[in-house]
Length: 323
Image 1 (spheres, one colour):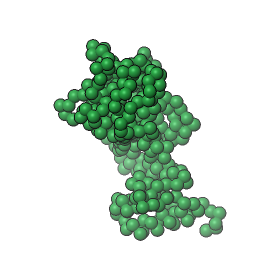
Image 2 (cartoon, rainbow, N blue to C red):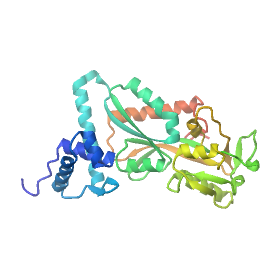
Image 3 (cartoon, helix red, strand yellow):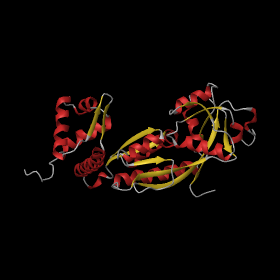
Image 4 (tube, one colour):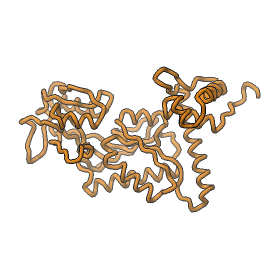
C-alpha cells in the first residue's frame, strides 16, 4: 500500500478505541473487551501509526484523547452506532421499531425528575432501543457533550454556539436551603431576599458550575458583598448533607429535595430581590447525526419534561417562554 493511501481502520480498532476513551484506562478497557492489555496497547499503537498522529495521552492517572483522538472518537461512535442499528434492523426485520443506543446526560437535580420516568417510557415504547444515562454536575456533562460522548444533554444554558444546538425548555427557580437566619423572609410567602444572606455561611458548587455564577451575580445585583462560601462542593448529596446537619445553607433548585434521605425535610425558600432562575435546555452537538433512535429519545424527553411541569410534579419550574 502506498504511503498516500488512507488508513485501513477496522471495526475492532474503533471499538477498542471507543472503549479506552469511555473507560479512561487501557487496563479497564482490556478487561471490558476480554483481551490482553499488551495486545490492546499494540492495537492502538498500530492505529496511531496508520493515522500518523497521536490519539491518546497516557499518564499514571489513565489515558485521555488528544484533539485528534476526540475527533476520531466522535466519528467512531457514529460509525459503530450505525452498524449496530443496521444489524438490529436486519435481525428484527421491518417490525423491529426504533433500535440503537442513545447516550443522555442529565444534571443530578434534573435526573431526580426525569431519569426513571424516561427509562420506563423508552422500555415501553421502544424496547429495541438501548438507553445510556449519565448523571453528573452540568460542567462535566458539557465536557462529555463537547467530546462527542453524549447524544443529548440537559444543560443550564439558553444560547447556542457554533458547535452546540440549544432547545430552551424550562426556567428553574433557585431556593436557599438549610438553617435560615431570622431575617430570611416571610414564612407565608416562602421567599428569601438575597440581601438576607449577607454573611450567612454557604456551601455551593465550585466556580466551574453555572449555579455558582448565578448566585454571585445575584449577590452583586442585591448590593451585597460576595457570598460567604465555607466549602466548594460538587456533589448534591454532600450539599444537602451539610444543610441537613446545620453546617451551612446551600442554594439549589426545588427538585434537589427529591435526593433527601427518606423522611428527611429541609427548610427552603425561593430567592427573590432579585429572583434567581436558570434556563434548562436540551442540547446536542450541531454536527451530530440525528438518527431515528436519537430523535425518539429527544421527543420523549421533551414530552416528559412538559408533562411533569403541567402535572405540578416538578415544582419551582415553568416552561420556557411563560411568565
